[in-house]
Length: 412
Ligand SMILES: Cc1cc2nc3c(=O)[nH]c(=O)nc-3n(C[C@H](O)[C@H](O)[C@H](O)COP(=O)(O)OP(=O)(O)OC[C@H]3O[C@@H](n4cnc5c(N)ncnc54)[C@H](O)[C@@H]3O)c2cc1C
Image (cartoon, rainbow, N blue to C red; front, side, top):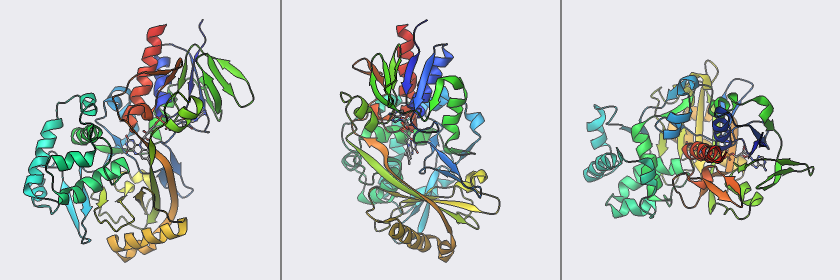
């Protein structure tokens, strides 16, 4: 019998790799530094019953790898309404309904004060342009920034500031929209084709589903790997474990540290998520994400997860999630003060009564750099997978993990 495949890292990529190998009957040993699997996809349950995802994130049901690898029925998905509520520079909210799923919303969408009539017609053309395209083909397109793409194709500064920056700035954690236009088109296509959802019991249900299918004796938690080579891995105590193949499924920073020939990401996008408990939902139960188009605000987007997934809050309470993208340069107390002021201006005096639950400051949320379709990557005989080898998304993590396992299975 050949030695097992060694996988380092039990984030979504490592778990997808392990599960693909396991389903094919191939033995593996998975080593994860943390005490739980999931990597950047984790949920904490507070003592009083709030489910707090470590940073606001959503699953998109149209992701090709979600359709391929995830049993979505068992995740009990709860969907946000398609569209968004946008807070305009004058502080008023406007509702942007999705005309594809809500035909009555077409006229309202055309009238919404977020851009010219031509802008809205261009949006329609963009929708038509991405439908039916291969996701990977979109990723290969246009090596220019999203902002340049939008300007070059004639969108007004108004719709850029009032729709694209609040919406996609939130997805990319980058309000300058400096990432590649191909990735923007891919994400736009995924929003058009599917829904943004949360598993009823938190985002961590996603890695838990992948991990549940693995033999327990093959998964080692709380075991950081300190060096890797094509023949195996070494631990802090000097012990060496041999593998037929070694898969490095860690984040981009640690991949470069363990295997310097694998380039580090160009940089990282940071986000901070603040959670509050409210006595009742400030969202009127409409189920929309709320995006802030005001340039002077510290809060960039807000949502009420318990409006769509009541399991996120104990009975009689509502959960408020507020995100601040990028470097805010504030200490925790000042940040909280500014966020509270913003929320009170946005949602009224009641917001001053919301009980602060917790902050998640995530400096290494999304890697930046070239964004390419998922592929098998081999450096010095070590396979490398994870979002940083393709583009920053759950879909890329799932795809690169699966493709790596399939490449190994083809070898022997
Ligand atoms: C706040 C936030 C919001 C996001 N929003 C979205 C979203 O809405 N939609 C979307 O598609 N994507 C989103 N993402 C991105 C998505 O979560 C990631 O792309 C994906 O989880 C990356 O998975 P991964 O397996 O590649 O890496 P990771 O999750 O980073 O997993 C790597 C694992 O390797 C382990 N590790 C590191 N070093 C070692 C070592 N030496 N030994 C052993 N183990 C090690 C780590 O502990 C970790 O568990 C978001 C991410 C964040 C943080």
